[in-house]
Amino acid sequence: MGRLAGKVALITGAARGQGAAAARRFVAEGARVVLCDVDDEAGKALADELGAHYQHLDVSEEDQWATAVAAAAEVHGPVTVLVNNAGVLHFALLHETTLADYERVIRVNQVGTFLGMRTVVPGMIEAGTGSIVNVSSVEGLAAAPLLTAYTASKFAIRGMTKVAALELATKGVRVNSVHPGVVETGLLPTALGGQPVDLSYVAKRVPMRRVGQPPEIAELVLFLASDDSSYCTGAEFVADGGVTAGHSLSSFG
Image (cartoon, rainbow, N blue to C red; front, side, top):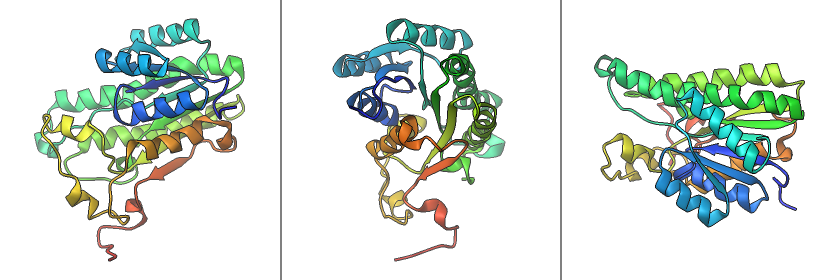
């Protein structure tokens, strides 16, 4: 029997990258999965491949959350696992960050996570069980230049996770955050206008001397979604190749 047998999982940003990797692992472990994204073509193709259900979802829109969770319940049953994975990235110096760009990142990353939690929590409380996995970042633990909006949103996700965990601790619902370092997904090229990105320079600054891969993050998300992590809530789980173990003066090898 799979580690997620009997669970209904909704994954946002599931068409590609980390979300797609998580969807593959969840299906392999017996979950009934609803893939959500704004990239309908890629999302539907992956859902068809996996035998899962696809639902269009702009995570920044409150009414679309209600529709997505209701659709999941109709197709598979009440959502018992939520992976808030959808996110966007924007590079700019603080004084060159427009309000529109700042709000766009906050709407997707921070508001999207808030709306997702708020929408699924009543059903999880009623069922007496649930696991929410909020994908933050190492930028939710420490800052990086050019990422004012992104860092603000990822710190907020970390904080919201802890509040929700405390409120839901006696309700059978666990809430944890995942903090990936640099992972080879489409997020960075998209933020840079679609141009290819050579990550070899970044890899040299990672203690493990490589960037992460989506399946590696998916394994951590799977652990938190499963009952294997039954005593974990309100915690931060880091997968960054050792980046946050040191500081800017750290060097080895």
